[in-house]
Amino acid sequence: MTPTPRTTSTARTDIPKVPLLEALRALVDGRSVRIDMLSRLQRMHDERGPIVAQHTGLFQMVNLFGPDANRFVLLDRDRIFSSRKPWMLIMGRIFPNGLLLRDGDEHKLHRKIMHEAFTTPALRNYLERMNPMIARGLDPWRGEGFLAFRAFKELTLDIAASIFVGVALGPETRRMNGVFEDLVAASMSRLRLPIPGLEFQRGLRGRAFMIDYFRKLIPQRRAGNGDDMFSRLCRAQSEEGARFTDADVIDHMVFLMMAAHDTTTSTLTSMTYELARHPEWQERLRDESRALGKTAIDFDDLEKLPALGWVMKETLRRYPPLPVIPRIATNDFEWGGYRVKAGAMVVASPIHTHHMPEWWPEPQRFDPERFTPARAEDERHTHSWVPFGGGAHLCIGYRFAEVQVKSILHQMLLRHRWSAAADYRMPVQQAPISKPLDGLPLRLERA
Ligand code: HEM
Image (tube, rainbow, N blue to C red; front, side, top):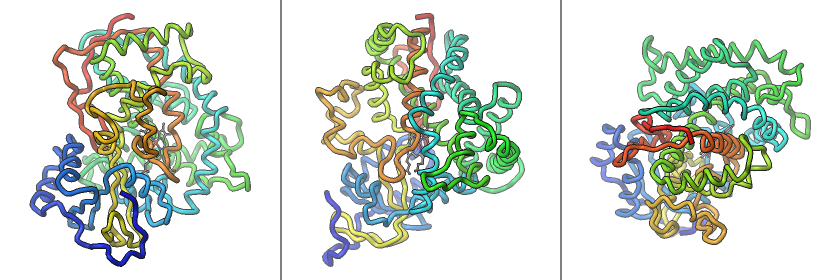
């Protein structure tokens, strides 16, 4: 399916639709849609084809399926899709003005400045500082009924306090971590009313706390030479000399912490689950890590752990932390012979594409060797593997995520061997961000 030119006059407007009753049922029963979004998307695609409209009451929602659709939406060559508009609807009250909530030239400029915090030297430095924290964090992990999701959440929050904000662990970071969790919960909350006691109100209070916290530190960080992400954003400038205002720095910091935190926790949890279910892969990765002969990895070691890289990619294929990517069309456009009106919410679905049998043989099978150079199933199409999105809004933190996930898994493999009950299947909530419903109970012993 390739996009047809916008001038085609034969394009139809009667896009195949999810029947009203079914759409209403999905709206009312949001919980089961969140838990099993993949089956719903697969049903829509299999029964109605590569473009399907849904009633939402507020606006038209149009799902486009498959790698060509991902390329069309994410590359946005005609500049017709806004990222800001849908993401504002979803999280604008709690995370306004993050990078993903900016469009066009403004987004381009902010991304250029932010790049300073994601260069290779910056990543090398983050990794060096992260390694001892990972060691300290992992050491006490052991036992039966160990809840991996919670443990990863705490570990990545502690790392964020140091690497993102540049503060040492202590009561202040514990408070910040708590506030930060309130923010994330509020952004996902269905009841968005500022009523005392509701999680949304706690989120708004948390946002005010974070703004105040960062604002007080900015002058000192602008003047200093800190190498945490916050200090780098304070000093960052584009080649043309453009810099962030105080308000920009604060908005970017709060958004970055959110964008990094749940996605990385989700990836670590899903990888750990698959490695518990596939002990042969866990042993293979442990052998690979032992062969490196280092208790912690350097930046240059990332490429020396290829099997770990395949497992990470396969896990992101099966459990993309962001299962769908929304945009709002700012102009009419045509796709696959149908005309879509400006104002429609257009949804690309990494989770659906990642399970299309045409692109991924036996898509339900955990098979990291798909990503070996010999098979390279991800190279059959530029947009068949898109856990980090693509185009102008391609995840700016994807190399940071690789650094963090690989360094944690390397140290964990050397320290611990883990398993789950023989008949255990992780109950996953696939949306809005993939996570286990039961915290992923594991048994951990010394490796
Ligand atoms: C495995 C971990 C991660 C996954 C799967 C992931 C996924 C994504 C996806 C799919 C997008 C694009 C969303 C869209 O186009 O609407 C995105 C954007 C973004 N991500 Fe990530 N992310 C991860 C980790 C991180 C980390 C660690 C950071 C920061 C350190 C980060 C910061 C961002 C930012 C700032 C954007 C917006 C980019 C822009 O608008 O130009 N992400 N991420």
